[in-house]
Image 1: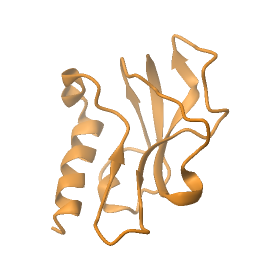
Image 2: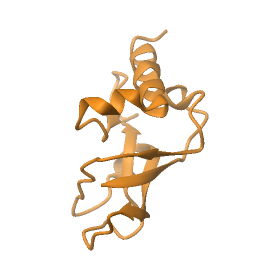
Image 3: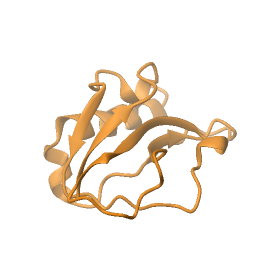
Image 4: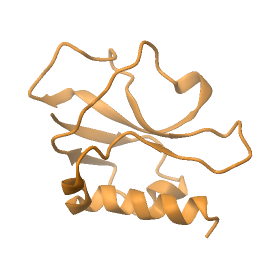
Length: 107
């Protein structure tokens, strides 16, 4: 389904030059039984109110989709999106992807 992603931490290098919000089409927005937020640094969330088509399966407003875990030594990034190759036509996603590689490589 299609939905809008909202950036939470625009100061993080992974989100450099990424708009404050952007649309991701045809994604599988998985849900968890609880938000990972207490254990990770959330960088972006999906706005469940923008789901198209709508669904009853939601995380009740806190749905992180990009985060890093600052509790481990290695730089790491979790990007929830990426279930189809057409996503590489999305400028926001490709910017996040390339920024993530550079950040993880400490460049």
